Structure formats: C-alpha cells, structure tokens
Length: 214
Length: 110
Image (cartoon, rainbow over all chains, first blue to last red; front, side, top):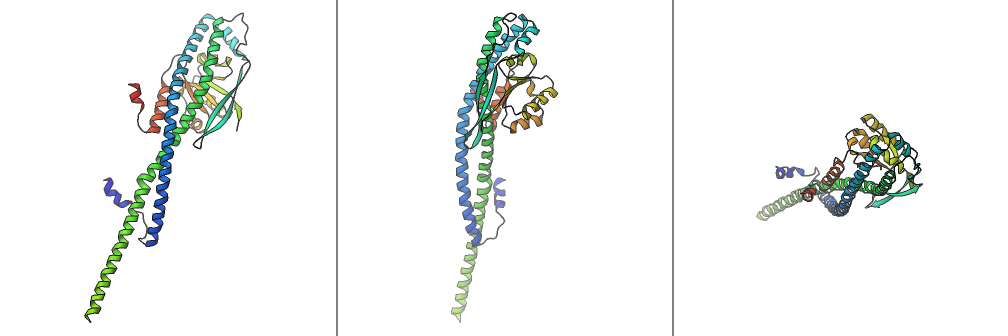
C-alpha cells in the first residue's frame, strides 16, 4: 500500500526545466536541513540519556531519605502533643531563596537553581520539644538540597524530552514526506522532459527522411 | 536573568508540616479544589519549584497541569508520609519512553 501511494506523492508542478532546477535546489537544502536536524537529535538524545541515569539515582535517594524523615516525624507526633509540634514548627526562622539562572543546553532554556539560605532551623524552645525533632529537621535539611537538585534536573529532562520529540517530528517529516516528494517530482519532470526530447528527435528524423525523399 | 523566588510544598498537612521548619512555603491541601487553588497561587506568585505529594497528583486538573507544564515551574513529585506510590519513578520512565520512542527501561528493571 505504502509503495503504491508513493507514486501519488508527486508535487503539483509543471514539468518544465525551470521547475526542475528549482526543485533540485530545494532538494539540496532539504537534505542539508535533514542532516543538521538529525545531528541535533542525536546530540540531544546523548545528553538526555546521560541525565536520565543521574535523575533516577537522585530520585531513588531522595525518596528513600524522605521516607525516613517522615517516619521520624510520625514517631515524633506520637511522642509530642500535636499542638506543641505545630507550635514548634509554626514560626520558622530559616528562609530559603532560590536564585534562578537560565542555562542553555543546545539553545534550550533550562533552569539552574542556586539556594540562598538565611537563618537556622532551630527556632523553637527546647523545653517542650523532643531531641529527635532536632535530628529529623537536620536530616530534612540535608535532603532538601538533593530535592532542589532533583527539581532542576527533572525540569531539564522534561524540556529536553519535549525538544527531542519536536526534533524527531521534523526529521521524520523531512525524511518520509518532503525528501521523497521532491525526489519523486524531480524524477517525474526529468522523465517528462526526456520523453519530450525523444519525441522531438523522432519527429526530426522523420522530417529528415521526408525531405530526403523529395 | 536572576530572580529570587521561593519553593512551595503541597500535600496533606501531616506530611508537609515539617517542611515549614526548613524554610519552604507549605500549602496544605487534601481535596481537588484545594490542590488546584494552591497550584494557582503557585503559578500567580511565580514560585520556581513546587513539591507535591504523589497522592495529590491525580487531583490536578488538566488545565492546571498544562499551565504548569508550559511555564518554567518545576513540579516535582515526592512521597507522602503514607509511603511512595512509585508514580514519580514511573513518570520518569514515561518521559524516557516518549523521548526515545521505545521502552529502554524494561531491560534495566528485569
């Protein structure tokens, strides 16, 4: 089926020498574009695959340590009263500011985060809190930098993936539609032109014969 | 360009309360309405990073996830205190499948 339809992929142009020249020029450009896009796709893919492994490891680590922290907090909330726990955490003195820089990977804007930390996590009275609270908060604080790195990398991966999909569509459109179309049309015009040439030659020979007979 | 913006955490109160102490903006949410209004706030106030618990991911409306997806906001799934559902991991594999076109993780998982 595909091959039969291929015959109809010819562009709708007049079979003239002028068109032939134009189409050949277009074919050249399309081929160059296709090669460039293909190279871009390969490079994007290479970077993507490098990143994906990092992100997976990072996510596993973050998930594991977060679960540990949550477990500790669950213990804490059973040991301390809910009010005093909430009270201890209600007015944090620690502040995290993210500075966002744009990084460019192959002309794709990806975020790069830089943290600015102010204050300390210990901001509650030690009288009615448990020592484990300090420990688990310290642990959470440690996970946080990993979490921010994970955020940055996951977003980067998503953006890269989108770009890869877009590039692949373009490469495929060129490879399977535009290039065959152009080649088909060029072949068609070339055959029409040479058929006309042969017809002309035959006519000339015939004429020559008629003239010679006189 | 460099701007300073903050980080938000959306999730059930029991899981996300602890993040308050380390300086993040905590937006407790449990219902779909709460989740989406929290996300709207995040979008309007131009937060950079949002951590959301896996349990709440299903409650995000299509429009909201589209809106966040188009922006530079980084939406990251985290497990809640009830444990990990593995959605964060499977989401990663999904992205890989989409980008690569084939499932290259299968062999790794075997």
